Figure 1 (spheres, rainbow, N blue to C red):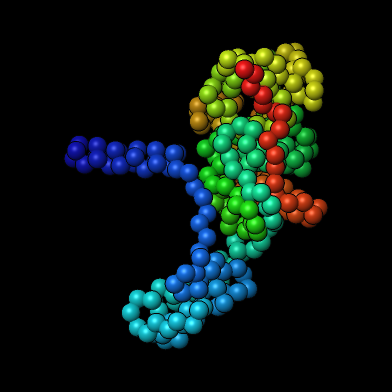
Figure 2: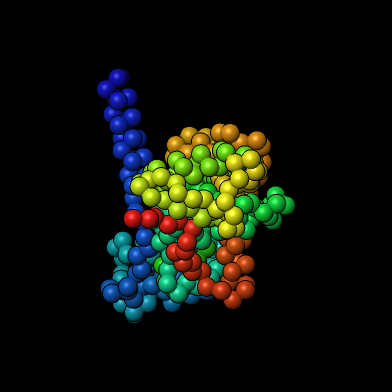
Length: 275
């Protein structure tokens, strides 16, 4: 019994480590054998073909009679109505966005979205935002962006929170970030780091006041031990919403798309490493 329990624990640990270390990306179907391409909401037959009884006709006209091809194709086609919602196009990215910790395009985009969402949800715009690197699980590829893509990037049920910090606690957190090899994604703060030490930290161009009060937009996962961040420590007040981070990001995306802007974000001066 102990051996079985140990084996199960080892397997779970291995799967957890793989999930933490996996680098996910989207691979496009090239249609080299059958002409199949990723279906949208309104082009299922054109993208995947049709099934008539035990006969599958692929988009390129190739016919498969009997066997597993028709069964697999029918299962795929039958699943499409339930997937229509996630197949909707929500935006377009010219360059694509990847996340490699703090001050990478997708990390900046996501944390900028948290600040934008804080004002709508809490009635107060956060001074800065932080989320964990592990909360971003994939990348935005150049071209059309589907709701399904955003679900793959932000798959966890994390909720937006607003945290009130004394300036001293904020500076302590930024010093911890500076000491790490890879800082977590953040927005609203401009940090300068040298030899893993915090040289300066500003918000809106002003030095952070140790006696001041600042508001953080973050996710409930990192308030405790999530990614060893402990963002709830030293907080004067914590407001928890019932809004998923996925929904905050989607709201920001729809705003960007509605304003005629592409889903792109640049590396900027929010994190500077001095030689």
